[in-house]
Image 1 (spheres, rainbow, N blue to C red):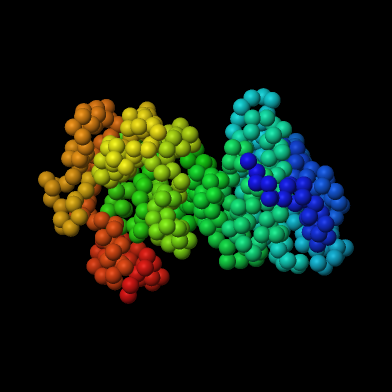
Image 2 (cartoon, one colour; image 1 turned 180 degrees about the vertical axis):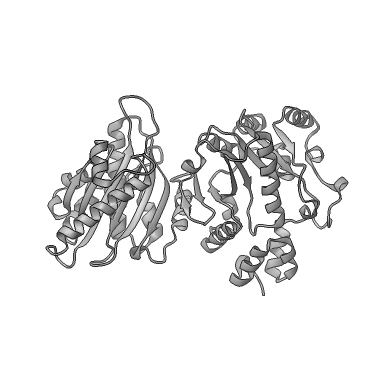
Amino acid sequence: MPNSHYLSSKQKAFQINLDDTIYGTFAEIGAGQEVARNFFQAGGAAGTVAKSMSAYDMVVSDAIYGKDDSGRYVSESRMQKMLDKEYKILVERLKEVRSSETRFFVLANTVAAKSFKGSRDCHGWVGVKFQGRPGEKPSNAIIHIRMKDRENQQQQQALGSIGVNLIYGCFYHLKNPIEFVKSLMENLSRERVEIDMIRVNGPAFQGVDSRILSLELVKNGYTDVAYFDEQGRVGQASEVMYKKNIAIARGSYRPPTNLNMDMLKSGLAAFEKDLGDNKNTLLLPEISMSKLLERGRVDNEDFLARVDILAKLGQKVLISNHENFHSLNKYLTGKTNGKIAFILGVYNLEYILNEEGQENDKYGLLGRLGRLLGNRTKLYVYPATELDQGPALANELVTSDHINIDGNMKILLQFLQKNHHLEDIKDFDIKVTAIWSRKVLKMIQEGDLEFEKMVPDVVSKIVKEKKLFDFKK
């Protein structure tokens, strides 16, 4: 439920209307002119609204904004064209006649809302291009939303609220980026709207990293995951995952070790061998929020270090709030119709097949396995060597056949093996199986440079240069 101490959408719109320095355009497509409506109904809209428009007809829209290369009308690129075009017109026409104290803005959204024709993916892009200060170059704040209300009118109302929140945040919460993110869902709930991506840029957001804002979305429960590409840039997870075969490897990656990298490589190879296709696979190292909270709070610098290092290694990254494998699998299978591969260490498999530590899981062991191992999901198990055992010998490796589980569970394990729900990874680098992340981290924190032999060269270089992970020189 909305918190009663928040300003309502009408109150926020009225406050903006009373500020004669804020003036701009509303361009909305797909769900009425719901953001602008709040400003008109609040009173005093003449102090804020220079223009309000909706180019619903595709031919009209293309004539105004140009055709989009993707051919889609509900896309980030379409919304950005709307922002750029309307902002250019706004400033060209009004810069010389408005007060020098004016802060111009454009609110644009393009959405696919509930239709009388039936069910469809109800989502959209909402953005604000604005001046944080009079005369300043424009900045951008862009979000992607998913609308979950069942009725079109409810979705329109939610869109109006989130648009008002975004404008209000751009003008009143710039000094506190964390509060800026929190304010986006005021007067709304996750049951109605999900914000699954945020990206900001420009002088008004100087020193603000979009990746931190994305992490805040996950921390606040506004979405389940945050996605970063191999350049470390914020992306939209659901779009990247669409129709892909996904290989995912959960870990702390603090830091990424040679074992981590071999696990990713060998697990992906095994998955693609089963698929007979390497053109439509997506490999994702994944870090759960619980791993980021291991020290009691999320250290933003530590978080960014992991994303940056994995990007240097050519890896995409997923941050999720899913505590367990079966919950994560449910999320992934909802985003793609492709196959799912969990690449995991053998002791993770041992944990999955034991009740210890999972007594409070409402599904129970069989329920968890049922949610994890559907027709499209398979586990690829990477072997291990006991800590401090040294370089492994083939007959000393711990594989799925050697895990410590109850005797009655071994029958279930054999069933999973025989029915190809899981398999041991065969082609791996035996020399790295004795590397344990917690030992590497301890060496880093003690200044033991032997850790360099256990991580990729780029990891060693960055850790030492930036003194990451409490590196002690």
